Length: 113
Length: 112
Image (cartoon, rainbow over all chains, first blue to last red; front, side, top):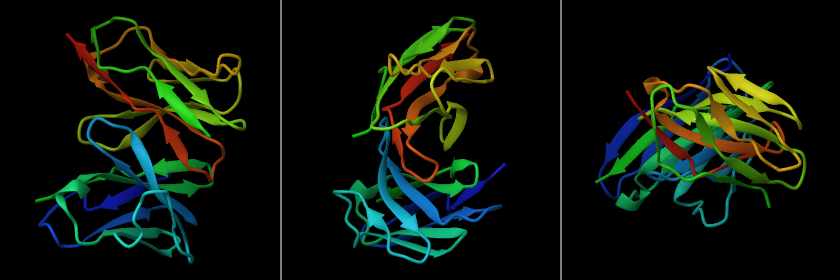
């Protein structure tokens, strides 16, 4: 079946630094990928829709200058958390649209100290 | 807009007990409905899905039936195991290329 990977799976960074998270569709091409954020013991909230070759569409309340999304190819989307702060600590999950549905990555746990 | 309301947890059951996790939805169109499971420290895994009214999704002993008249998609399992301990999310999507709307998740703990 379709597989979506994320890298890294866990990352710890210092406040003020930037962190890049990769989302790859391993055996299919995805023109659309979604980025979700999950707070502890809460549901997933959509952050943005990433479309290959065009600018991402951000949900209301999500700072586009803080959460930079680049969908550089049909198999790769990246989320960069710029000038990270402790409140950005969360579980970030991507999903990719394939022929037979939407597939989720395993998630990236970001901890900002 | 679209939304999913899910039974709040946490839920604690003894092994071999019957499980029901309620899920109701609001949608503007004709969504597909899903149950995802998240084991500790891991990402989401699709458990089952149903794409139209009266469809029943099933997997690993879990079942859920798409009830349009009650806008529900309750998850059931006849006999839970310790290995079923996880967080379960109900979700809907209005189309293959569209975003998912998730419920808040229900934490299940099964004790021996």
